[in-house]
Amino acid sequence: MNFDRNTIIGFVLMMVLLFGYIFVTNRQQASLQKEKKQVADSIAAVQVAKKKAADTVAQRKDSVQQEATANQQQAGGFTGAAAEQITVVENELMKVGFTNKGGYPKYVELKNFKKYDSTPVVLGGNGHSISYSVNTGNNQSAETRQLSFTASPVEKKGEEQVIRFTAADSTGKSIEHIFTLKNNDYLIQWDVQLKGAGQLLTQGLLNINWDIVTHQQERDLKYEKGQSNIAYNEEGSYDFSAAGTGDSKKLGDKTKWIGVKQQFFNTSLIAGNTMSSADVDWKVPTAEEDSLKQVLTANSTLRFNLSGASEAKLPLQLYFGPNDYHILKKYEIGLQGHVQLGYGIFAFVKYINRFVVMPVFDFFSKYITSIGIVIMLLTFFIRLIISPLTYSSYLSGAKMRVLRPDIEELKKKFGNDQQAMSMEQMKLFRQAGVNPLGGCIPALLQIPIFFALYSFFNANIALRGENFLWAHDLSAYDSIAHLPFSIPFYGDHVSLFTITATITSFLISVYNMQTTPTQDNPVMKYMIYFFPIMLLFIFNSLPSALTWYYTVSNIVTLGLQFFIQKFIISDEKIHAKIQENKKKPVTKSKWQEKLEQIQSSNQQTAQKVKDMQNKSKGSK
Image 1: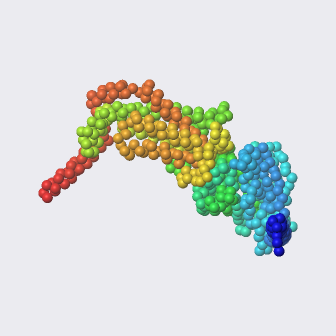
Image 2 (image 1 turned 90 degrees about the vertical axis):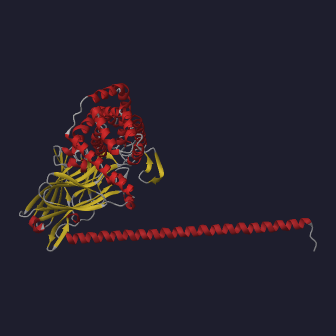
Image 3 (image 1 turned 30 degrees about the horizontal axis):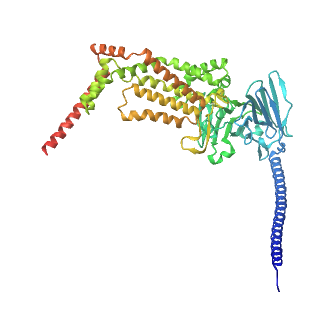
């Protein structure tokens, strides 16, 4: 069979088209099958989800039904709690959501405060309950949260709003919770009234179980945990237990109130003098549980003895609100202790804050809206107050600088003989009228001021949410950059105020190195550089109000050092004064005489040891 060229070409084209058609058709069929499988899988998934949802709904219905049945059985003659109903009562400061399941405030929304995500601050909420056990029948008991209370209409009495929650049985026994809210107040008055208390309570004991879960309010959850604790007023004085990872505390019959304090808010149950005892257990969620956005959970039991009366009344109070020192102080029950202006070994600094720092801060805040400027003015005020100490420190440094040539001569004269060098140096200081500790003592006296301000800036709610320059919240760290990783001891952000505080501290160190006779000491030489570097790590997660204060304070220090040493303190005059002092007879104090005796004794002992060593070497 003969094939011409055109026939071969036509045959090849037909084969190419055929294979192409088969390839495309197979691809389309595979794609169609894949789509069909996806549709089938989606339909199956939807059916499974519907079945699961139906099962879940059915399970929930069964669970709710079972809970309602169990509650009704335990409720005895009372009505068991079924569907929850929330009644909201509000004043100018807060909205309180009362639940009929137990008749207590389940949550409180604070109108004047926002969370880190700009939603309202809510205290209580999920996990919050207040309940106590009552006898509901023969050998039957139930928690009040298992009972259904009936809410009365809100009564307005002058500047007060009153709401009553009542649960009663057919025999005349009743439980009534009366809540009173005043205008412009965060305190809720709670009166518990029991009719038939002898039957409702076993041996007249009423044990209130207070469970609370505190939820994240601030941007830095880790720091918020560190600033939170369990607080209480026992025997008329405030005390607290650090949250840590969790713990427990037993309290006696002198306990007035128990509170769960977050960084800037607290929830407290105030009992007065009628409490028999109390137990508190708390737990702080681990870092792995931070997705829950919980700060700490606490379970408290407060015991009251109400025996001896058929009708009993227990007055209580609940505080849901900010840790504002002025607001808390007006209640006169020690709640202002929640604003921790100084504690531990530095507890005394709270008096510096209460009587100096806070009044000055409040004064400036009345006339200046920018809190950053208020902090700057507060810094100027503090530096003015401590200016005598500052001048004394600079004067002492100048005297030491003038004596530097004399000290160098002593070093050349005595070489490695430290004992002789020390005695002669002390003699030189006495002759010149120089106190070698003159520069240290003023610096040490400023340490309490620093710790007072550290406590103040951590506790002052007036800083919360206040913007200044690049800082969006002066009560938290400022951040100009977020790192994709976390540096140990530093964090995952860059605080610019921390950098400015570090740089200005470094400049002070460099300036002091040039003006004080310690640059030949290798330890001191590196220590003064080490301190600013430490600040970079210590300050990075602290409130930007503190790092801003430190920056301003350092700038003022640099300016004062330059001005005082350039225009006020004259090295020539100091040198002339020292030379004049050297000519005067030196009167030794008893302490100086004793010190010289000790040094002389040590020198003699060292010389004897040295002679014995030389003698031993000679005999060999």
